[in-house]
Image 1 (cartoon, rainbow, N blue to C red):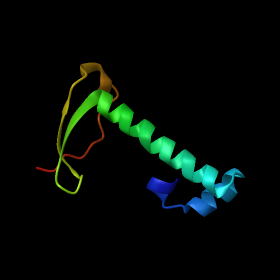
Image 2: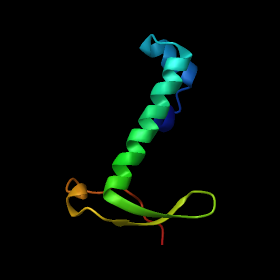
Image 3: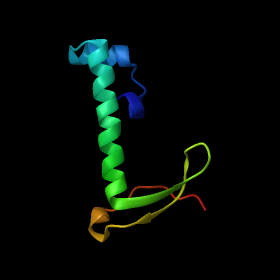
Image 4: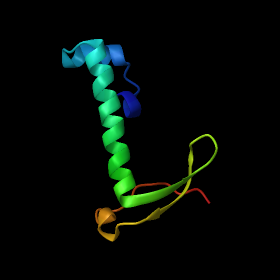
Amino acid sequence: MYEFDGVSQKDIAALESISLSGAKSRIQRGRASLEAMLKSCCEFQLDRRGNVVDYETVNDGCCDNGCVWNRHE
C-alpha cells in the first residue's frame, strides 16, 4: 500500500489497527523480503543513484510466471 498505492504510513497503521512504529517495521520487512526475492532471481546493474539500469536472470525457473520488469534500453 505504501510503495504502490501511495498510502501514508500513518494511514496504513490506522487501516491495519497497528501502531505507527509497527507499520514502519512491516514496510521495512516487506522491502527486505522483496529485495531478497528479486536478488534470488536476477543480478542487477545499478547506477550511482541506485537505480536499476540493467538486469540478467540468474535462476532460469524464477520467471516462469513472466517477468514484469520494464527494461529501458
